Image (spheres, rainbow, N blue to C red):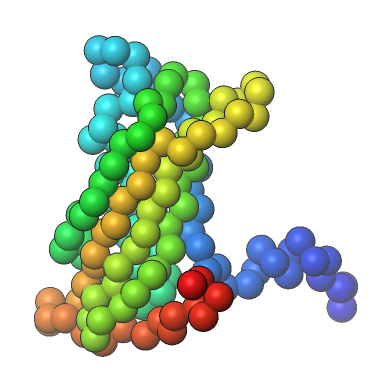
Amino acid sequence: MSSIDATTREALAAPTLTRMTDIVMPEQLNHRGTMFGGVALSMMDRAAFVAATRHSRQTVVTVGVNDVDYVAPVGLGEIVEIVAEIISTGRTSMKIRVTMVAEVLVTGERRLCGTGSFTFVAIGPNDRPVAVPQVTADPSAG
């Protein structure tokens, strides 16, 4: 039996954060040469969907998009990294905080470009809400 190195062990561990990365292509740009807000919103919603599904291991649907703020534009050829984290749960719902960071590929410069809060509900086979695992508050989060 071969031993698993620390990097592999970390990669196989259940994730607490969802990270999705993509590159901005010409068809994602608006007339000013920056990424459409709708494209950014779609990327953020997808990352939140993955985080909610991983947490609940159920079929989930978006029921709310809240407090989305675009704070800096994203340009052609930049890398966009979306980080999503479950921050609270109800009986059937999950609130996910999403952060969007752009990175200039050749320099490594990174900047915050957007944040948002998404609410998802888990649904069962009869399309009715079903219970989700609860998250506990991190006492160090202040």
